[in-house]
Image 1 (cartoon, each protein chain N blue to C red):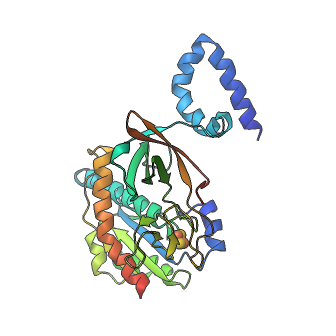
Image 2 (image 1 turned 30 degrees about the vertical axis):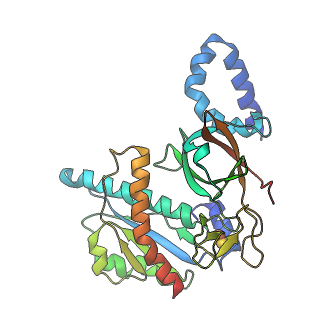
Image 3 (image 1 turned 120 degrees about the vertical axis):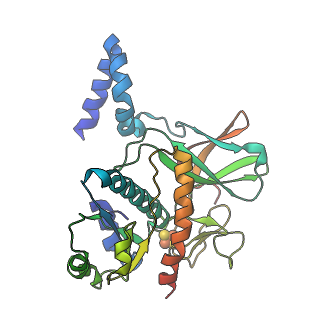
Length: 148
Length: 167
Ligand code: FES
């Protein structure tokens, strides 16, 4: 499910089935040297999120991506903004990111960190197969939590 | 919705004119997306070629990916990747939609070791027989949709989804 009015209607009727929230975390940098990396990683995370969403539409709700800049105090973001998601609404919460810093933070859910792969020069079918490879790797992290 | 009517009028007027041709080249892809279901006669639709050769199909469903070009949806997508589970029943090619009839996850053929010869939905353990029939006791309440299939020059072409006719 996506964070749209229509999907939310479905969610509200099917709460007991849609028990997982996924929150993408993306770093937005405007320093010349890092801008390209930032854009490319964001593209990767959003593509991956959209692929996971198609596969698991009926069980996962995807929040809009949470963006921050290099100046962000991650510790504080983890303890305030993101802490909101520990509320009982969703049984499972995942954070999807390519930014390594989150792996060392206390977050109210599982952090799924992926190395970013630049997709911009790939043709559609290569991109699809790369993303599916990545999906296969993150899959166990979801199913493990669901099985608990 | 009055916008539908005016859009159609707009189309027919502009298409009549010479300039309409040029307008249609730029506007058509967008307008077609919105108007298509209205203008399309039932049972037909644009068929999209796939890489799958019809004579390589067996009775075991295989995953066939295909892409619908130029569909604007979301921020990053211009093409939509689609998937079908395709197999042969005698001489007929059957293509089922992988979209679970419960809440829309993607189902897999033999996706669960405990249930051979079935489609399995990992989200809430939904189960379907090979013809797409939902197995009572699992969450889905209806059978998997079918794709309109045609074999053109030996290759499987897929169209839109229609309600299951096999169950
Ligand atoms: S979405 Fe397939 S069983 Fe619930």
